[in-house]
Amino acid sequence: METTRTATQVIPILGDPVAQVATPALWNEVFRARGQDAICVPLDLPAAGLAPFLECVRQARNVPGFLSTVPHKASLASACDALSDTARLLGVVNTVRLTEGGRMVGDMFDGQGMLDAIEMTGVALAGARLAICGAGAAGGAIAIEAAKRGAREIALIDTDAARTAALAEKLAAVAALQIRTDLPGSADILVNASPAGSPGAAPPPFGAALIAGARCVAEALTDPEETELLKTARRAGIATVPGREMARCQALRMRAFLGLETTG
Amino acid sequence: METTRTATQVIPILGDPVAQVATPALWNEVFRARGQDAICVPLDLPAAGLAPFLECVRQARNVPGFLSTVPHKASLASACDALSDTARLLGVVNTVRLTEGGRMVGDMFDGQGMLDAIEMTGVALAGARLAICGAGAAGGAIAIEAAKRGAREIALIDTDAARTAALAEKLAAVAALQIRTDLPGSADILVNASPAGSPGAAPPPFGAALIAGARCVAEALTDPEETELLKTARRAGIATVPGREMARCQALRMRAFLGLETTG
Image (cartoon, rainbow over all chains, first blue to last red; front, top):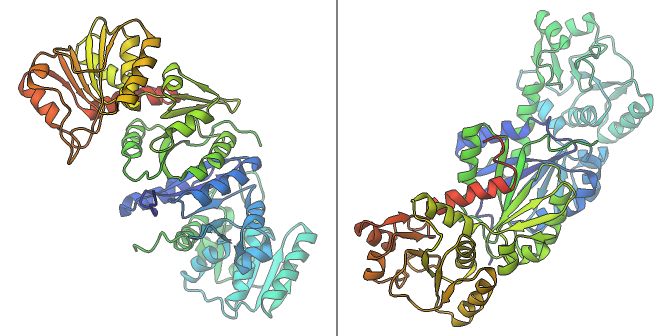
């Protein structure tokens, strides 16, 4: 019998492990509040389960797409039939849409989520100078999106010189802008996209003068909710973006990509 | 990384279609009321998706098992590594448990659910005479379970003579009891396990005298909630089992089988 997504829309989130992921609780709260017949479901799946998972969700009629967290972001990018520019440049996806024809389209929304949140503080990206701590997937996505939105200078700060250089090279291909891999003397926007400042780890190496001279300080960490970086910025009267605000903006982008925001 | 079911327990229910299935809403209400970290998720899956689905859930660490409805009950019985007596005799399963080693154990709980509900009205099965309308999977499971619980006589009523005879043969192998395939003059327990009485269909062929002489009248249909059969029995002062009560009892058996009633 042919039916087309008549049932509850199911959005799996894949991880190994997955118990730490807050997305199902947050998304299901939104769906419940809206009366939307959709559900986000965590799947604790080792790498060996990816291929059958993909084959299964391609066949299922009520799975518009799925989300992914560690360690599957790169494998899933390889498995996609099409990728956004950012996902292709970084080689990772955190959201995959399944098209009617069974194709998989992957994207990576950390950058859009963070920059949407920054712009909501009233700080424009066009012509801005950013310093981003962390040259991993999240930092990379943020840097690429900042370049697309007209940033004038981006400083990439990471203890891993090789991956910093690799990201700088990718970034140079996106737009014409100043790219540096050392701490600048001043910047308009400071972003932490690294584990620095998480429990047991020192905060990112943004000094007091750098913070005091910024217009916006943004944090990707959600644990703790209030990092030292955010506290310092707030004491200095600087606009801040906490990790949960980036996550909220990113979730909106992800759900729109999966066709789950059409009911407004 | 090795984790063992640290995440939400996910129980898929497979169907094609699946939008009509009430199980996810009913189960999730129970889980929510208990504060149990488990979720039942409908999956609208054509037959081509069964093999990858099975491989995926064998790999996943937070799927204790799954449920199945039309048209997958027979295919899944074939795919199981072990079956209950009832599931093996009937060749169908509606619940599959995944063991730690990745084995699939299938069972069919319509019979236990219905007979649990009948016994809760105070009517004993030992020595009872039953008339069951419907010799399909549900009727078969109910007949087999009644035989196991000591029924003395079972009359199987179905318009399909061949499948009625086939079920009578299977039933004879379960226990020594009287089996007939015509309407008896009297019976202790009347069961409708057929579509008779659903919207647009005539009620089962249980006459007024048969109903008035019974001690319990049970209905498997849940739509409508109040069938003509139930109304007639209630007017005659006979104990009744509505379809939703059978469904409730069956759900308890299914969840226990999947290890979800241990926190009870």
